[in-house]
Image (cartoon, rainbow, N blue to C red; front, side, top):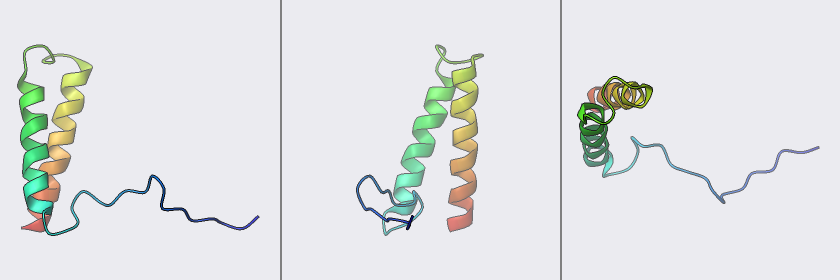
Amino acid sequence: MENQYCKVGSTTHIASGSQASTRLVSYYQTFVNMAEDTRYSGTQLGEFFERKAKILKKAMEELA
């Protein structure tokens, strides 16, 4: 069976394009705020938001 490539549902990398740095900063701030939110602190969801924020921070540092 041959591989098929389809554009439906395809995505672009978060750190690509002319607006990449602005997008990364926005997402980073969102995840930091959600991680600091009292509803999520001390929960697995809060830890998830913290991990996402760390990943985005690393991506921002690589762009700079």
